[in-house]
Image (cartoon, rainbow, N blue to C red):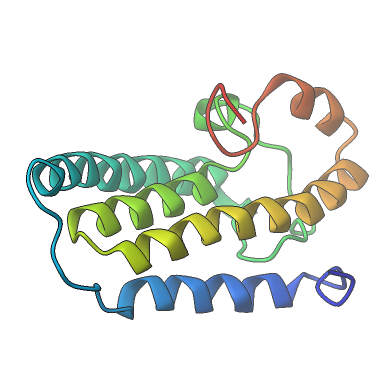
Length: 156
């Protein structure tokens, strides 16, 4: 991972977008899921997609001028610890994964679902580098990290 842990973290962003694109275009492998799994997938998938959209929208607004796709914090930024950031440290990553898993379930697309779980792993790796930079930039980050879960609210 040393190749990614330089500068702004451009490599993390490139792989992130490749994974997201792959999730969107990978075809479903027939046959379609049988009942009741198809209906459960559609209901759970729709719910996760809506949760992802809402969480991502709120997190986007609350981050304000701090928003960047790169792991490196913006110059002159501040540590956001309120709102959805009081529930999970990386709510935009959580929102993207929630939406990807939701759409995969809704569309009954197992390859897309597997790639979505890979995206979760990738965001975990990206956030490790990002958090090293946040801890070096913001003295309060260690306490924040101890208090708030990283990617899955109240769990991880």
